[in-house]
Amino acid sequence: MLHPLSPAPAAALQSEPAAPQLLSIRECAARTGASVAFWRREVLLRRIRVYRLGDLVRIAEPDLAAYLAARAALPRGGRQ
Image 1: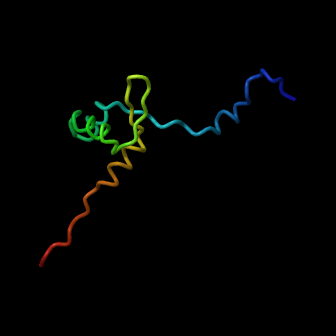
Image 2: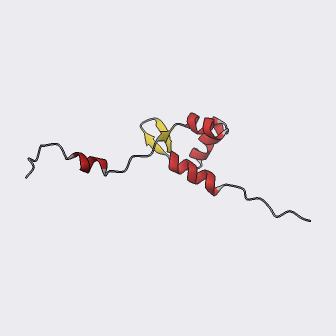
Image 3: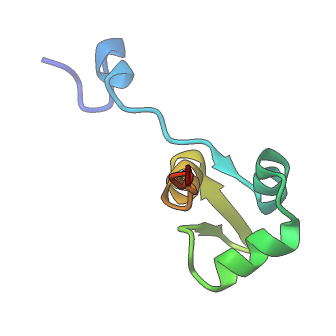
């Protein structure tokens, strides 16, 4: 039996999923080629999920990927 204050076994710690990386507005702008103002507007209009940590605004990588995938333009069928 483990003592209540003893550290958890290493196997239990490894089973936790890794937290997604949080990106700043500037990092999102750099990754996508869009302006910082564009990303600030998207946050203001609540078009993308954000995490607010005090005054900091962060966007998780999976949320950015989902945002971009939802707005991907599909090629139109060309006329022949």
